[in-house]
Length: 281
Image (tube, rainbow, N blue to C red; front, side):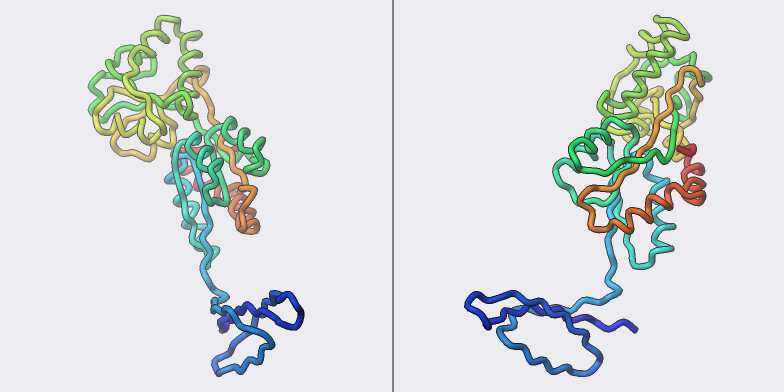
């Protein structure tokens, strides 16, 4: 059995300027007599099995997949509690720039990660998964959409803002659609946008609540909801999103960061991601 550890801070008066001495003394079950030269100013006990909080900041579209990954990671690291924050990649970048405490960052596009690499906030990122866009409609499908080519028939569509990856990718996808299906298709589709949301979960929610006829989200987000139907976007029009993961430069849990990234990239981690609609990076 591990014993508690007594950590004491001692000021020694041997010399003119008191020197700070830290002594760590293992205490058993009995009383230990201590003879200290100088003045004892502080002691505290800590257990060697004290739990560690491992913090992960990740894009909203990773919510269900990373929650499952966290459960498995905690199973193999019994003394670890994985704490997660999910938001739009642009919000995560701002949080990191403002000094939020975190160990790992996972984003849905390279741009925000590159900014953080250049500013020294994160280490070199790795691609760990890919995703693609789909069109979603409510279960009752009021606009009667059966294929992507029907998109101009909707009266209202929700997309992400240009600053969030899913919104940026949607704009690129509609541009490709204009080249393949005609300029009128692109113009009509863009004119149906009634709301732009700051993360993909807010985009999906508008359709789930019946506030829009359609929306563009990631395949993983469509699979995670039983309140929407998904409609594929043709491969030659679609956009693949790459997901990046990186260690925070100021983390105090480098070994855990390495373990987490290795797990995410492992066959077991990739299998979990695949169940949630992602493909291997």
